[in-house]
Image (cartoon, rainbow, N blue to C red; front, top):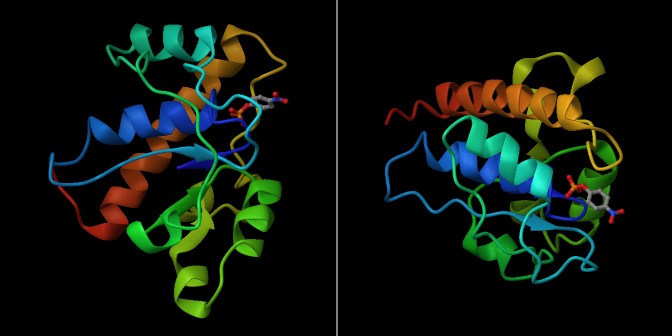
Length: 147
Ligand code: 4NP
């Protein structure tokens, strides 16, 4: 799960997805920028997840690395800027094929971005949570994965 800072959207996506897959799946998140590296998720993201019974408080922000393109089968990007940045870091077609826009799975290409809640309020974080939950369910249905 990849967003810009890895403190709002992708930590929530990681936390939600982890509740939905068997433990044998390795779910992680990263950002395209490193300015928040080592930080825990944004307090509002932690609170929003906690409101839904999910603890993301122990996550730490990290930038995406070259190794991620080898270690992961799927790389989901939260918006088109993040997608472009992540795609630019791929080194071959195999890696390129792992990368997609997270909400693309919902089929509505006009609204396929998870809006950045960083400059918003708790309502924006809740909206993001709902979008991420819908996206996670749709991705799992597409991949035919049941917990
Ligand atoms: P995220 O949100 O990409 O969902 O983690 C943001 C976090 C930090 C910044 C922007 C977006 N920032 O500009 O520092």
